[in-house]
Image (tube, rainbow, N blue to C red; front, side):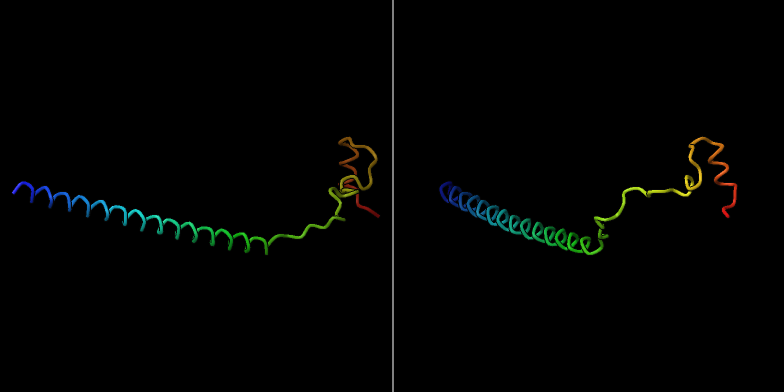
Amino acid sequence: MIPLLQAVLGDMISLMAVMAIIAGIAKLFQIATSLNEIKDVLIEIKRNTRDYSVPVSSEAEPYPSESPLHAGGSGSDAASLQAALLDPEP
């Protein structure tokens, strides 16, 4: 009876080990599929954001050459700034 019990337990342990290996392989395929879907989504996001980018002109000035506050005044003190803002232009 004991050799029969040992054989049955050995077969059950072998069957459980094979089932665990098959479950692990199935889980690896599931992870690979999920990573592939994430990669596809990231590529799609990158493709969609590239379409909405604003083209930058290389001829654009980084700063305006003349600001409205300094249009009429030669000094940078508060009095010339106030005069430039309050005096109407002819």
